[in-house]
Length: 142
Image 1 (cartoon, rainbow, N blue to C red):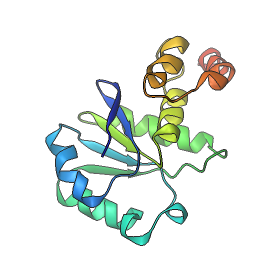
Image 2 (image 1 turned 180 degrees about the vertical axis):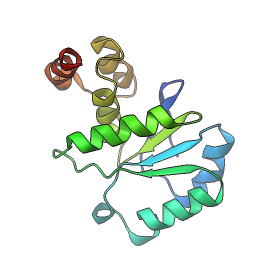
Image 3 (image 1 turned 135 degrees about the vertical axis):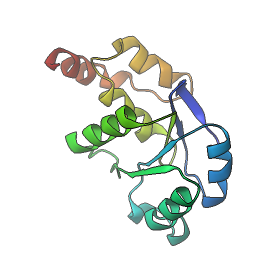
């Protein structure tokens, strides 16, 4: 498990396993967002298994599968709603943490400076500079 805190309230991670969830809860996370479609992963890591394990520990588990290169406005809205309603820090995961960073940046457009939305994930190697025009357009639309 490799948790990468983008902000104090939002972190991303590459794929987690059910056995990681107790440590995630102990680290103070209240909500886990699954940004991976089941078609990408083996059965033991698919949504139903992860959700049951998370909820058994009292974690809120949000299913928001983001398909690489095909993120939808609904993905962004779901991520934003999960972050807005969380009662504590959020951990989102995908294959590498990149999609979870991208959907966070788009969901936070208009709430944080564009430089932060690009720069904070860059500390962990997530290069979102190519999203700058899209983030700026979303910021102006709000």
